[in-house]
Amino acid sequence: MFEGQSQDSLESMMKANPEFRQLYYRHRELDKKAADASLGVLPLDDQSLAEMKRQKLALKSQLQSMYERITN
Figure (tube, rainbow, N blue to C red):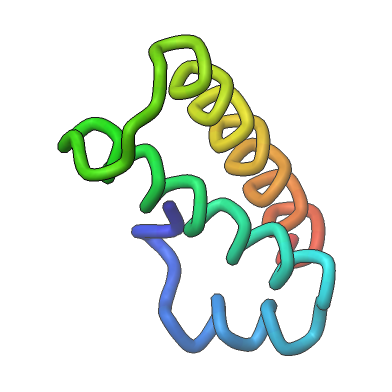
């Protein structure tokens, strides 16, 4: 998600901002569940998977906005 950013920068952000850290880990959790569902490991109907992906995308957008606002 933050491919262009250094790992140190991201870790520093997570230490300094509990909300960012919580959202980041929630996004990772949804990402893993969506991947598992796509592989058939996690049984989900199409509607549930689509909702999960919408939530993940909203979190990504929120995280990117927070990161840009704090680092710039």
